[in-house]
Image (cartoon, rainbow, N blue to C red; front, top):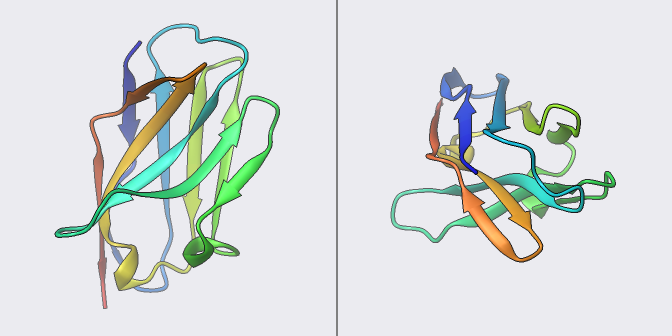
Length: 114
């Protein structure tokens, strides 16, 4: 399976972006999808994930500003990012965990200008 992400770009601080990611084929009904990010010089970190049952987990730094959602029928996951801050700038990676087998998307750049 491959993950294709889209929606990154340049936005001013306080603005919004929406990232989307689609799996190239049907995936196991029990899985976790979501988003990680990696800023220059930093480790990749969890942003938000959502299980096929709708259980979510967010990084503390994005709670209340970001919302992760998914469409199980279409094998897609999205990330709505509001009130963006310069510290949110990073390459965002789509993530899929199927019974312990992890797949990463190619990454999409998010740049936030102050």
